[in-house]
Length: 338
Ligand SMILES: [Zn+2]
Ligand SMILES: [Zn+2]
Image (cartoon, rainbow, N blue to C red):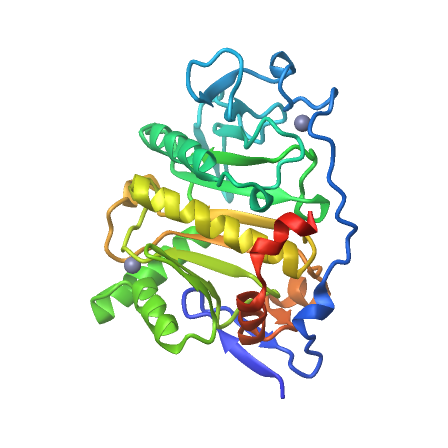
């Protein structure tokens, strides 16, 4: 029997179409897992081609001339520009603003063939670079909101193969973020607690949608998951802003992320995916009602007419079945699969 479920945070309804339900295994991409070369001469992100990229913002380790682990550079095809003034123009029903903003690329490794979940080293240097840029840009009074995200694979919008993620700092806060904030605030006003903290406790108690739990993080399938295998990773400690993460938590998050990406890689055969960090805008850092998280969306299905026409998603995989499937995948097999 199909079931409608509502996302408590967004009030959005999804159809869990159990009649058309697919077993998680049916969504395996069956991609031939062939490792790309470690170095590609024409790749702008490979070592030796540093002068082909726009100016470097930072590198890890800092100050190193030759080798590097992570590089942050300005995006050559930036969506927003740091050289434009964010001046608002209001004319009758029209609102516009100069396209000010920062668009960084975080090159995650010097190795072109690097796949986080196949490596012994974790994502820790990458997460530290995210935080360094997040902290620095949060101080810029012109910036209202920062989004850190990764596109993996062409279905997820990646145009370059070399492993990288991106950061966009914008001078406005999107309506979607505003709505989530308002919902979180009204929950706090009514119940006196953070709705995310409450949900994480409920999910830990019930266990059905839990994928993994560590000392500092909990990875879950959502009750009203809009697409198959969509996952959220929440810090256990209440934190509104990603900028509040401490070094020990960064280490733990890197391990959790590698495990989750490894489970997707082995279980679904290297699906294309996006992940993003959903955090409070800098001006709301420290609020008691919002809680940051990392959202991972495997791109296994396409958004079609019904989704576009109604704003409602049809998910053909039960979130509980997806969680059970992922719990049973052994990410240690990732290295062998690669
Ligand atoms: Zn490369
Ligand atoms: Zn919380």
